[in-house]
Image: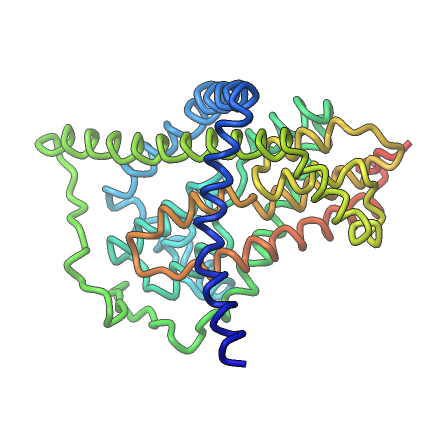
Length: 358
């Protein structure tokens, strides 16, 4: 028995190195398709991701360098604290996460932790529900460009936000007893295991304005480059899976399980693709024409909520320099996807204007 357990442990230790080796071999064997995929990923990053996210990243960094976050916290605290068990400053992460999209919410939660604005438990709750897909992507890219219908985008955005808020309410009980209380006069009590040396000055003046803008741009460019790397990497990974027919094999294996939920076989490979990277997956799902298009929309809603492995790794990279646990984020996003899909199903079957089945 001991020998068997030992072999299992040994195999686990080699899973990730084996995946890296397979990726390297795939780069060599399918170089032509990989080159096209890398170019497509770079084009997507340069033309869509950078223009839509970089300005928001810079704006977020600048706002976090002022007293505005604390002012927003004072205003929103009567609503945010009872609902999500987070001090009012968390409302800033929620608002910016909704407006700008992945991975802004995680970036702000990480910044709050580094600056000591919220406790460890509060930032982990923020991670579970504030890292969302933005309206530009859901309504513009998914609704108008992919499905060719603004109403579809509006439906997906409504259910996405409702699911996000629901997850936030559920996660208000995450490490409930460990959460520090907000005391009078808005003085903040931080967790003992995190030094208050991380608190930074919020006094912005003409003397340090250039320094603050420069630091904000530098930090934002670093994050956007990291995202670009993930976009290109997963574009190539999906290309390798397609060229090696592994994607088709995985879809074939998953089809019987998905059939239980009335998901057609032709959608299986795009759902798996979406688990890896949502843009390619959703684009594929939208391109499959079936009479019950509500299935396509519900699957899209799930993927938008879940975010995909690519976004998940981006978030893990962002929080790696803090003491935040990735567990609430992973559980929260899976729950977000499931709840968003349920809400979308209910809306489609309740409101005729959202039913697009032929």
